[in-house]
Image (cartoon, rainbow, N blue to C red; front, side, top):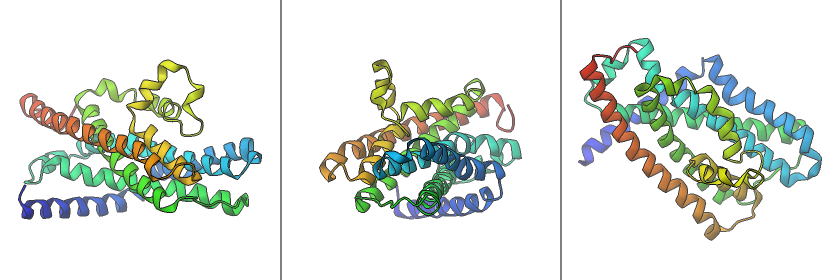
Length: 265
C-alpha cells in the first residue's frame, strides 16, 4: 500500500469516527446499552458482593464495563452495515473510492471507544456513591490492555457486521448472543466455575482475553511477562478476525452485485 493511500484511509477512518460519535450520542438505545445497563449490573453486583473486599469491587467495576463494550460490539458494530442499508446510504458508501471496510472500521472504532465510557461511569459510581477506595494497581499495563481490547473488538465487530448482512437468520439471534458471551468471557466471574466443555469456546473469544487482561492489570496480579499471553491472544484473534472480515466483505459485495440486493434484504 502506498503511503499516500494509507494517509487517505486514516483520514477516512478519522472522519467516520468523529461523525459516528456525534450521531450515536443522540441515540437513546446506545446510551442505555453502554451507560445505564452496565451501571445497573454494577449496582446489583456491588450490593451482593461489595462487602467481600476492594479487590472484588474493582473486578466488578471492570466486568460491568466490559458488558457495555460487548453490547456496543454486538448491537452497534454488528448493525453498522445493516443500518446504512436501512437509511439508503449503503449504495453511496460502496460506490466511493475508499473501500467499505475502511469506513466501517472507523464507525466500529467509534462505537467501541464510546463504550469505554461505561467503565468510567461504573468506576465513578462505585468510588463516589458507594465510597470504595478504588485504584488501578498497574496503570500502564491497564492502558495497554484497554488499547488491545479496543482493536481486537473492532476487528470482531467487522466480522459481525458482514455476517449479519450475509445471513439475516444469524442476526435474528443477535439478542440471544448478549448474555452467553457475558458468561463465556468471564466478565463478572471466572470461567473455572463453568463446565469444562465450555472452555474452548471462551478461548476463541477476544472478549475473554480482554477480560483476563483488564481484570489482572487492574488488580495487579500479573506482571508484564504474564500479561503477554492475553495480549498475544487478542492480537492473534484480531488478525484472524480481520482476515475473516476481509473475506466476508468481498463475498458480501459480490453477492450484493449479483443478486442486486445492495439496498434491501
